[in-house]
Amino acid sequence: ASGDTVFYLALSWAAVQNGTPAQAGIVTAVSAVPRALLMLGGGVVADRFGPRRVVIGSDAVRCATVLAVAAVLFATDPGLWLLALLAVVFGTVDAVFMPAVGALPARITGTDQLARVQGMRGLAVRFAAIVGAPLGGLGVAVGGAAAAFACAGLLIAVSVPLLVSVRMRARPADDDAATPAARDTTAWLDLVGGLRYVRRHRVLGPLMVAIALGDLGFVGPLNVGLTLLADERGWGASGMGWVLAGFGTGAGAAALLLTVRGRVPRAGCVAAGSLVPGATAIAALAHAPGLPAAVGIAVTVGLLTGLSGAMCGALLQTQSEPAYLGRVTAVGGIVSLGVAPLSMPLSAAAVGVWGTGPVFAVSAAVCALGGVVALAAPGVRRAELPG
Image (tube, rainbow, N blue to C red; front, side):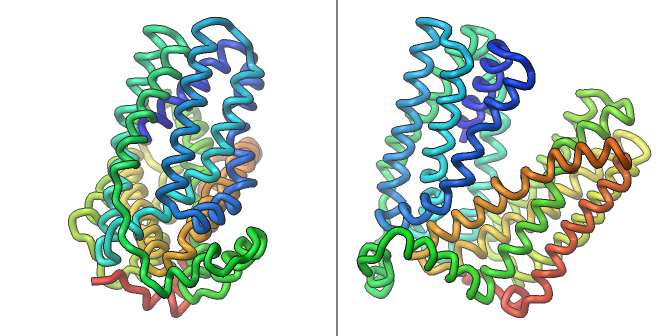
């Protein structure tokens, strides 16, 4: 995760140095297109060939690609085309890597520990963001984009032998019979079967709808909307940084809670119910009387939405059959990485017309609707994490 953070920082820096701001924006965003379009196929690959093999192979490709680009940048200045190609390749490999990573925990630990693993994963993501950004900045300061890409490639390289050392639990015999390879079906039928499995599942189906609505209502205000709010209130970049730090603190606390406890009673109700007060806090952020109050509200938003996100992730892990976990993770990734980012340009345009208050209120209503949808589903309300 630290390698990914450094990679995207290096990509942004190199794109800005080699083109206009608009061109840099296109280069940094282009990796999301193959990731969103191909992730469902990546889930099929993970389920057909096993998550460990797919994770190791795709991570090795990511490492080799980034190091190759670093070497080219040390030797010459090829321009934006190489950066755009790198972004496309990285996004394509991510479409395979991410579903496999999501399917891996169920094969390395028991179901009673999956919630704790989800919490640890959340903490790792927060730590990677804290460590990766300074490393990327240091690389840029020392040797420009080439050094930053080299740093990213080396960090990813460290993860490859760590993944090789992971030992998988034996898959139960009934799960072996359910794997796509064992049924000798086509990849297309596997993809359709995975979507049908999610749609018909009493927990996963409504949970995916709740995740989609929650992310749609959350991503816009906490990305583009927060920037515009900070500018409107005169908080500046440092003030926006403090608000983001507050959110990260709350989300980290939620991940730590799940890591320590391992099991939260009435997990479905907690996952859905925490979205509603979290959405209320999102709406309140636009009306904060000052920066300290905004930071406090951001901590609340991070804690509640972080708790909901961690619980949703744990439920996806524990409610899915292992044979479908790659495809289930892919559907969740499409929702978060493909659908939710669409709210960012819409939020920016809406703020320009109606201002931050109404836009944050509408976003909060969408987020809260996700919680209501989940609470209205009996399967989600009654869902529990394994003891």
